[in-house]
Length: 306
Image: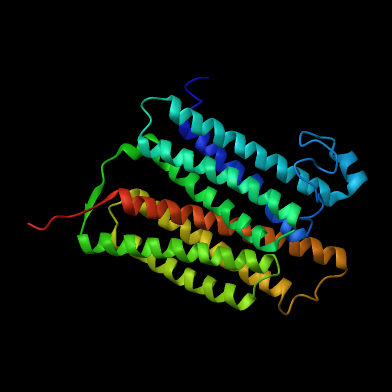
């Protein structure tokens, strides 16, 4: 049991829970517009956070309350995982300082996320909700760093490549990360009905073009780097799926297919599923781009000219 319970596996667990449950259910809340199903915090309409009688909650407060309730439970579980992870990095004496710092910062961000969530509920503030959504993506990026740097394969030496190629890739991967977070802010604003579709569209197209350039650079200029090649190919597939979901989301939520539903319930359900899928795929894009950025920064070595 001790051999299984490692920092690497716990970081993986935190990443899966954050994307699949915390962000997945949180995205569903925004898509279905049930963010204020529970206007109280920390108590939940007089109920406990540990209440698992979802049928009774639904009967008393509606199905939206169950979605919000499970989101708070998932977020609490993620916070517990991050707490244990941070403790492990401080207890294990052979833990690298950078890993310890990453775990500590991640725990701090998760705690701040919880406070933002509370403030969003108590104040019903849409701006706080937007920062709350972007903060969840930051947790994902930090966990990706921890997953990679805690893996045994991370101990491999950096590979040498032409200095100008390494510098260019580092510059453009950093640019992609900045654009992704700007686009995430624009997307969260749009989902909260506080932003314009045009801003999100422009940023999405710009980010996709820059990311495609990064992928092209990796595939053509760094052919000897197995990890970068694998990440670039996977990112290309995820990006293609994300762009397809984005077009579908526009067509069915804002475009020509918005009136193609037989009834209002079907329309609402389909649009909610599509919007949440688009969000989750965007999180995966961020995760893979973070991994590429990390490889470019730490596992590429500029060749020294003779």
